[in-house]
Length: 238
Image 1 (cartoon, rainbow, N blue to C red):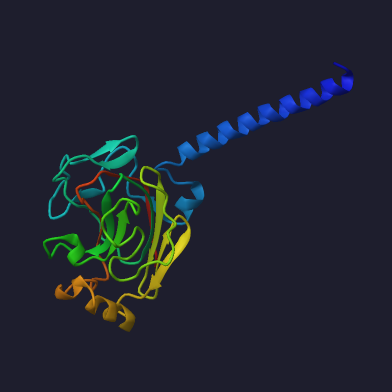
Image 2 (cartoon, helix red, strand yellow):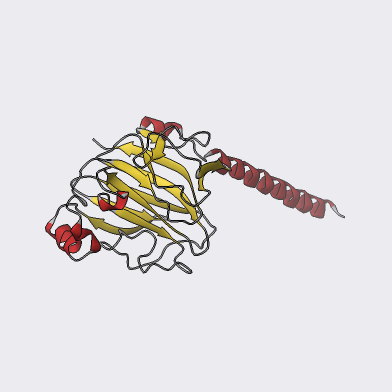
């Protein structure tokens, strides 16, 4: 091998080693972000609703504590058995931004609700539900990321069952927005004429308090299927 070829070979080797180092560093950084906040997130007011170690910020709907139907596995909140029950945050929130990752099982179904009060038999009877399901093998015509029976999306940005998806939700009196994997799905105003007309055409119209609360619990739904949640972060909006 002549000197020029040696230089070229060393350059390729150096580039390969650099690429391996960068890939490893990136992987570690991504792993380190699970259930953690960056310095800038903390400065912006974000808080974790799940730290990967305990469920201290959650309890079962209309219960004082958590049952054993939800478990912590691989740094996630995981539905583990039938009868687990819906779980809600101990704290109530009014205006906020919420981000979470979810992974749904094949054919599975779940949901994320907000402004939930414990005045009815089920959380969805007061709190609007953002659908979570496997859009391919799921059985509900309401697709993941839609505001159930109220605001659908014209696109499908979800990843397949068994892969992680990210939901982002902004809830304020002036404007509510929902995003799936960075794609904006819908925008609406709770209590507006458009909102009320849609509610009147939905199954929720029989519940007098549906969508009326402006402050309430955040809820993760037990729909009888395995689902996992992680990176659950919230920022209260003043």
